[in-house]
Image 1 (cartoon, protein in one colour):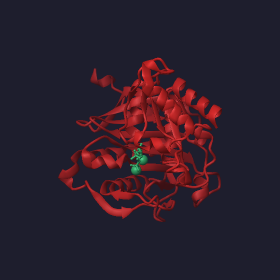
Image 2 (cartoon, rainbow, N blue to C red):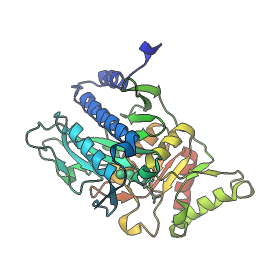
Image 3 (cartoon, rainbow, N blue to C red):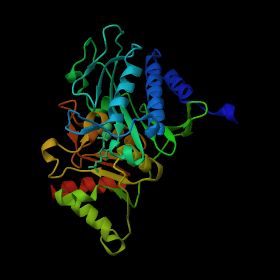
Image 4 (tube, protein in one colour):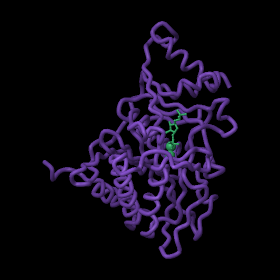
Length: 337
Ligand code: AHG
Ligand code: MN
Ligand code: MN
């Protein structure tokens, strides 16, 4: 039985065979990303035993205090991906500027964007965290990519994925041909295809939002949540359940597994910044995965993957998940402005 198990490497190679003219570069890049996630998984798993928990007492470009593991995971991702000649440049939540490939290494044809450790406020309390990544093509003729070369709408992504460091470590990927999930077998050090062709239930009675922000919300969001809370006795005529993990990777994973809606909408607190979550390395890759699994992802006013980015660390409102509920939210935004 064990010989029939599909490893992530085998899966990627078989996918590559379907793509005309593929050179193997993309397969090799994904392999390096997988390696980075295995290293991060190992560190997250060992936690206090290897002294990686706690604050680093530094801030990133977004003004957020960095955890030691934010910085270490960023380092791991860079080191795993800079040497092999598949990547032309990288962008990360934890780096102010575009990361140029050091001169001693060849440059590749891909741009790699990542959130090395998502949900890092959870790290010290031993709750799930993750890594999110997005792969774009480096524009033709560009030898030294700069910020503007990364400013491509989400529809241009050629691959997006996340690793979830939870009770088991998982990797979930899309290359635009559906969504597949892999579970890390710690004994052999390989991700094994465990969740083929993930699909999101169109209906749901579960929502995820940080309720402590409710007084800052806009009317369409207030209306939607009020109706959910009113349950059976209100306009919706059914009871809803709520979750908030504060780790987008874990929330998106739950939605892939059993449906739901996840929202970090525009609110008066984050309006000046454009929202809470980052477009290029959080919202876009997650939107690609959600759409590929049959869900919907929007700001409330436009499809996230259609947004023309204006800067590397741009933030956007995010509402994603089960089709019927997200479409209802889009309707409320249309009606209520
Ligand atoms: P990060 O740890 O990479 O900064 O991202 C955390 C994000 C996201 O994963 C989560 O949904 C949200 O921020 C949580 O925000 P609140 O703490 O405001 O609930
Ligand atoms: Mn994040
Ligand atoms: Mn992060």
